[in-house]
Image 1 (tube, rainbow, N blue to C red):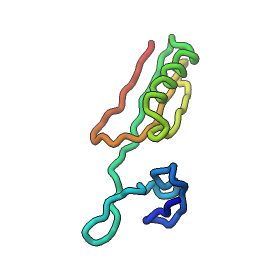
Image 2: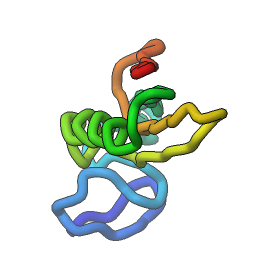
Image 3: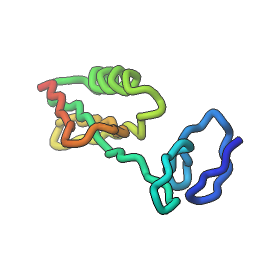
Length: 106
């Protein structure tokens, strides 16, 4: 069991990040004693196509999400725009810069 140094929330040892404030259990201290927040960005991968079936789009998205692992996956969303199916996989990325990618299947 560990207690988040940022917000005081208690967590089981299997979790490395606070669900409440996203603070890491092993956040390194700064010079003034405060904790440094890890640099993470929300990224997304889009799977879309007017000719692709929903089954195909969801299969592609599920394969990509599985490759990320549960610690990086945030959610999977879907929508339709003028008969163009769109599935987005939202995930945490520690890499700086833009890595958004659009997987067209037209």
